[in-house]
Structures are given as structure tokens and as C-alpha cells.
Length: 181
Image (cartoon, rainbow, N blue to C red):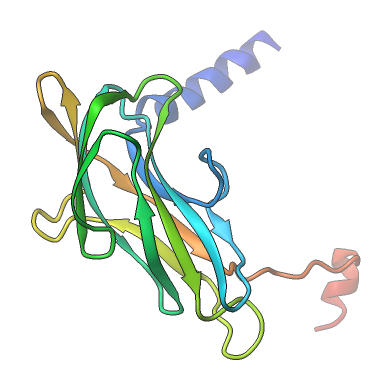
């Protein structure tokens, strides 16, 4: 049993060591749900969080790439934020006071107010529509800055899914399914 635990720790260690800073759009107020199923003409929120920054974060830059049928109607920032640009065309944010990226391990950077002109059901539905955090158009990077040295580092942009295509599961055995073919 002890050998199995040691082997498990050794296998999981590289994943923990190489888990770098990420940035993504979540559909809950804390990082959790990265998928959402809106109905047609629904207004909903997306929250842009940075995770695992590992420093005191004082600035970021990125762009949000939205799928067709979903539009950004507005956005809000945490108090004390200076912003340049817009989420869809490239956004640069500076924070004062800087945000602690170590505890609790994530920071809310922006709240997006979204509108679904097409939904998951109804006329002309959308399926598996990606919402991506991509590089800022001026630099091509998703990057942040650490306070007080202003050292730059890169984030990995995450992809969220609007209207994930669900796969049905039947209550049959594998033999019964193979006999269908």
C-alpha cells in the first residue's frame, strides 16, 4: 500500500510542478463551470479569472474571442482597475491595489455581460461554440505583470464551451450495443 502511494505521488508531481498560470472565462462567480447552455435571447454573465499567477498581479493583457450568436453587451472590472480597450478587441488592465495571485489562487479580472441571439435549442441552435482567451492583438500574448518588479509572464488561455453537445447514454450492456451492428 505504501509503495502504491509513493508511486501515485511520483506520477502526480510533474503535473503539479508544470501547472502554470491560466486565464479563462467561467460561468460561475468562482472558477468552476466552463460551459453554459443559454436559451435564445438570454442575458448571462461570464467571469474572466486568472489562476495560479503565483505573484501579486498588477496588470494583464488579453483578448476574448466569442462565437457567432453570443455577443458582449458590457463589462465590469474590480474597483481600482484602469482599463484600455475592450474585451473583444484587446484589453489591457492595471490593478491598484495589486491582486494576490497566491491566495486563494485565482483572481476575478473582468465580468462580461453576454447576450445569446442564438441558443442551444430553438431556431438555428449553436453547438460546441468556443469562448477563448487569446493573445492581445498588439503583442500576440496573454500576459501578466508581477508587483513590485513588473516582471512579465505568460498565461495559458483556456477555452470555455457554449452549448456543449451532450452524448446520450443508453441503459444497455456492451454486448447489446455490439449486437446492433
